Image (cartoon, rainbow, N blue to C red; front, side, top):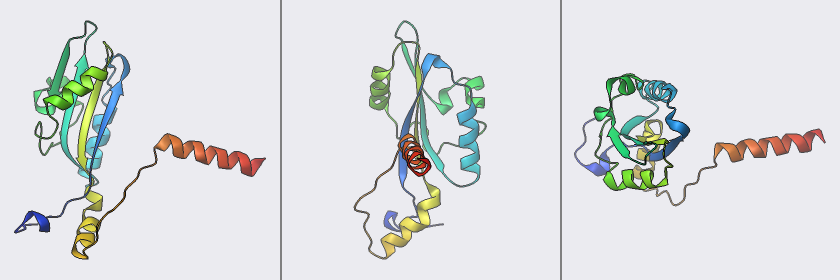
Amino acid sequence: MTTDSAAEAVFGPVDTAVIHFAGNQFNGEIGALLFDLVNRGVIRLLDLLAVIKDEDGGVVALTLGGMEADIRDAFAEIEVALDGDLIDDEDAAEVAAALAPGNSALFLCWENTWAAELATAMRRANGELVEFGRVPADALLEMIEAIEEIEEG
């Protein structure tokens, strides 16, 4: 879709996440799932940064384009729209500071393309999102388990 201004552009909400990998044990499953979500149009991956801290405390931060082929291959052939443009050195330093030696993290930034049409319709109706919240999956599962126990008891 071609637009004349940024205000008319169709964008969904943008989320970020930092995923911690104990012992630097990344197995590639996340890359395959991201690839599927991108291919189905559910999300558009905007930026990705891997932060790796070795046992001696040395840190390496890599964008998808800067990763070695075997690591990059774990992400199938995901196109990262703004590879290295949104997540910066300050973000990498903050993630690295939180990592213990011998651990790594993946910092992701994605657009929820599934919600773009809804966001556009809200803007056209002069709607304004005034509050947004997210219930963590673990908290939801705990609530469901508690309800089931009450219903059984």
